[in-house]
Image (cartoon, rainbow, N blue to C red; front, side, top):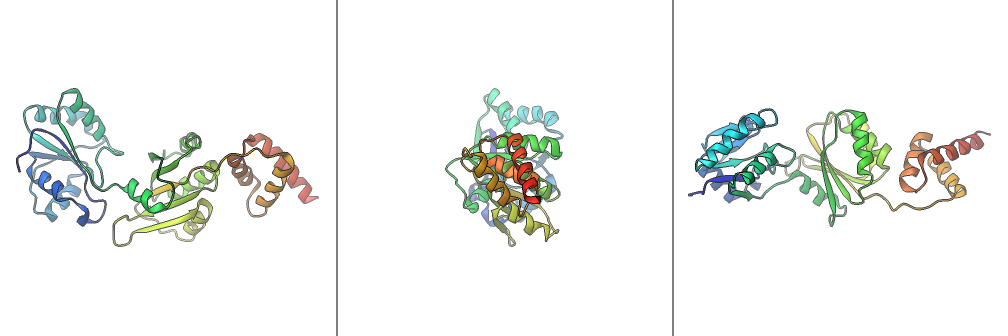
Amino acid sequence: MDLKSGLYLVATPIGNLGDVSLRALETLNSVDQIACEDTRVTKKLLKSFAIATRLTSYHEYNAKRNRPKLIAKMLDGRALALVSDAGTPTICDPGYKLVRECITNNITITFLPGASASLSGLVLSGLPTDRFYFHGYLAPKQKKRKQELYDLNTIPTTIVIYETSERLMGALEDVLAVLGNREMALARELTKLYEEIKRGRVEEILKELYSNKKLKGEYVIVLGPKAAEVVVGDKELSKILLNRMEDMSLKDAVLEVASLTKRSRQEIYKIALAVKKVKKG
């Protein structure tokens, strides 16, 4: 297969090798070199299909240094492929910077579509897909993560997030506190033998995860759109808070009610304190 010089963005399987396309295999077998995140991971994929194309690493830590070398090769007439460890390249990796450099240098770019964890999770979620926002990974530190979530609370569509097993519980606890008890789906091992997807409200999925501490791998979190905000009077607000405080803390009740109304958290907190006082009395 003769290829023109340029960059070939090749999507690879996210778990099931059967998802790789014939066109992807032909391209990976025909390019002069493949730039990949982890050469060990890509080598396993190529070995499965008896492909022996040369590999070079291109990842977050060496992208700035290696990018000019890759551009020079393509300007010299070579065909290069870019792959990620799994899924579609340039999503949550430095590949987009290589694409920008190719555009600047008038280098031809070809995309070979395929698997995507974010789209797979979204499609399986059962949540609205007509409009959605992809956020990628949340910040690892709680303070910054919560700020990101407050920003996400202004987005009226379905939201797709990636998270690691180590940070999943903390992330979902912050989601509940900031975004409220939304509908959600949690997916892992997509396209693999033990593919798993949980659907429900954030709170109930958290409770289920608390009883199962064996969290492994990476997860796709799909959050449903926020409920429409409504204007609620003090009397009605007191009834809602009284009901919610039956099975959650005052703080959590305030956060949830605030996410559903146009009232400020400070206002709701004052009313919640009054409700608690009457309840005790």
